Amino acid sequence: MKKLKLFLSPHVEVIVHVSRQMERDMKECWKKAFERGKECDTCSWKDVELFGTGMCELKEITNKVLGDAKKDQEIRRKC
Image 1 (cartoon, rainbow, N blue to C red):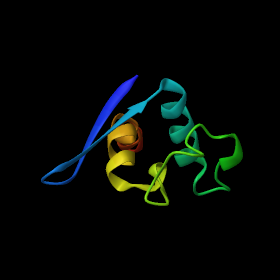
Image 2: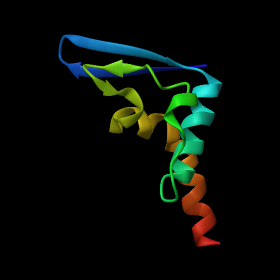
Image 3: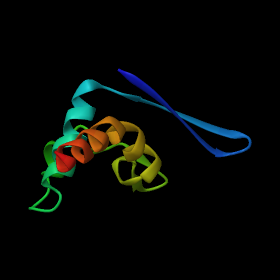
């Protein structure tokens, strides 16, 4: 399980605990994003929202969760 910290302003910190299933779901969703996408109804991120926006849609979250996966994709493209 990963613990992600987001600093929304100088006095606001949000901590998100991301399970391995959540990591797998996000990676699967991003792989399928250009095809048809993943079914949100079966996703572990389904009800995780911040101010009405899905946490899986926040750039700060996706960069931290997918950071290693994005690097792996870039390396594969170069080979």
